[in-house]
Length: 389
Image (cartoon, rainbow, N blue to C red):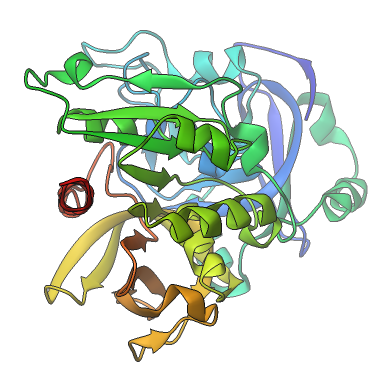
């Protein structure tokens, strides 16, 4: 990212896609230039949670909802320690926030954190384009950077690294371990279980959801070893969401295989689902434009119910929908696809039948909602308590 200056009044801005498509608007946030993978999010609310979700690292997020910034930003709603998006594109940015919880405007927050954005473009037309052409590299150029010839800007975009092959989870993970206690979130009974959560890009709401249910959560960096995990004597292990290509996470896949061999209950979401798939011997692949937003329908094959889910992923597990089947790594026994996406039949969950492990591709913590899949926390706690007792 190249930041040359910051300004309170909008300046000229241009968004360039790697296929040569150009959108012109005004600057939003910091003045400069930025490169990343252009993706769209369909959520009508929760923009602050989107911006601070580490899973969006390396991506320029396009908001399809027309009005962004209406409620400002505050410290309580942040999902991590900073904004992670590479860039931000909106149609109508709020001129001023209006909410009793607002502490500053979104524009001020973007400037403070050096996030280059663009406003005043037709984000729904851009979304339709990405739905047809697929997610692709892009750049946002504002101020004097936008005055360069489009041909030169396009070359910069094409020189950027594609998302496929990028190893990003280690980059967004915490450097030091920390613990979330149940008492911090209103639980007044004894601690029910101890959970080890590997931070691959974890959102703050995830350990909170466990703590609210009486579970002590130790959050460890992505570089954690099996010895460090065993030393905490957890009743279960959790792998979080995170950014990048799951095919690059060999270290975490090997760690997960070692964990599965111990018989410790395992639960993974999003990136964690992809890593469980890899640990079982399945492959992963890049989706054309991914699933992002808070309105993705998923079928839970266990109950037959349809959930509306929050999602943010550009890769998926390549596993057979018909099952159960013996895992390619046969030492882990049988596995079945437990959840499927109803828009495109993508694998949305895995359940092991011979070891205590399952995962989902979406976000049951769902800050900003929906909360249809919150039951998964209870399902995993039951699994930990059953194994513990």
